[in-house]
Length: 239
Image (cartoon, rainbow, N blue to C red; front, side, top):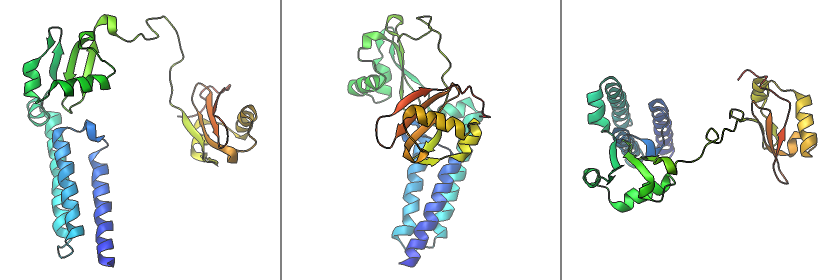
């Protein structure tokens, strides 16, 4: 039993390391060759767990080979347009100003239910509102709407707003994140002022507190509703 647990731990750590090296990508965003490699890795990784008589090396060598193959294929697809088309395929227009491109859908083995489902996922429900719909190489659908159906943005309304910025966690589950405190350049006095405005007395009462470069704080106490607080902070940190 201990040997089996030991083998599982080794395989798990190696597969985790290889997947981290291969890069981060959601399953729905994988190129076809990446999905194939991921499935093969999953299959090979289970062999030493189910067949304890098999030497562990017989699994590690194929795993390493598959990862090296991934880098070779990725390198070729980056360096050569022809190889990129062969390996990844190319985007296909399934809706054009003429309407639905039936031959393109046949090429992709896609039916109308698949198409409409993809369009709904992009928040478009009528084909007549779409100028172009493109099936990307990873299977996702990109929609370019007609001019009259495009979403209204602040620029269209001539509304000037501050640039959006990424909020940073300051407190999580009653614990101060000292690394982020230093990153944002805030001190204990700043925290106490925020606590006072939010009606809490200590960081231990805070479930989540975030701060962005525009000085906007979101504070969610462990008990009660969250609130937004505008502070005088103006991006004084080093982030």
